[in-house]
Image (cartoon, rainbow, N blue to C red; front, side, top):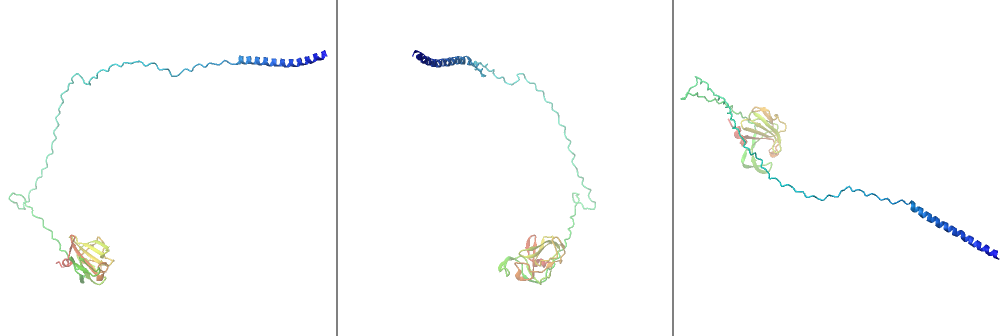
Length: 266
C-alpha cells in the first residue's frame, strides 16, 4: 500500500516538475533576450543643426548724409579776351562788257528820211491763187439748205433743219471733189451713210454723203478739183425716201454755209 502511494506521488511530482522546469527556462530565455535586445539597440544619433545660409541681418546703422554743397555756376570768373576780327575785302567781279550792236551801213540806194534812218520797204504780198470750184454732181436739187427754219422730212415724217442740199441722180453716177484739198475722212455714218469729207486748207470743208460703200479715195489722199471721190448711192438712213442722191454740205471755220452760194462763186 505504501509503495503504491509513493509511486503515484512520484509520478505526479515528476510530471509537474518537468513543466515547471520548462516554464522557468522560457522565462529565463525571455529575460536574457530582452536584455540582449536592449544592449544591441543603437543609441539615437543627434543630427547636427544645419547651418543657415541666410545670416540674420545686422541691426541697421544710422547714416548721416553730409549736407550738399551749394552748386557753383559754370562761369569762368576770369575775363575772356576777344581778338578783333580781321576783315578781308571781297574782290570785285569785273562785269562783262555789254555787247554793242553796230548798225549796218545803210544802202546808198535806199531813200533816207529826216533822221537819216533807212526806210524799209514792205515785203510784197504773195498773190493767193483763186479757189477753183466745180459742181460735185449735175442733177436736180431735191432739198434745199435750211438751218434757220424747219422743213418737212418725208422720210422721217417730221420737221427738221437741213444742213446741205440733196442732188438727185442715177445710182452709180460719179461724184467729184468741189475743189482741191486733202481727204479728211472716209467713214460709214449711222445717219448719213457713206460719207467723205475734204479739207481745202483755207477754212473750207466740204461733205459728200449718201454715197455707195465703194469709194475711190482714202483719208490723207491729195485730190485736185474735179477728182472722183465715189458714186451716187442711197445709204442715208434719214433721207432714204429721196432715192439715189448726193447730200452735199459746206462749212467755213466750222460754220455751215449755203452750198448753192459756195458753188456760185466766180
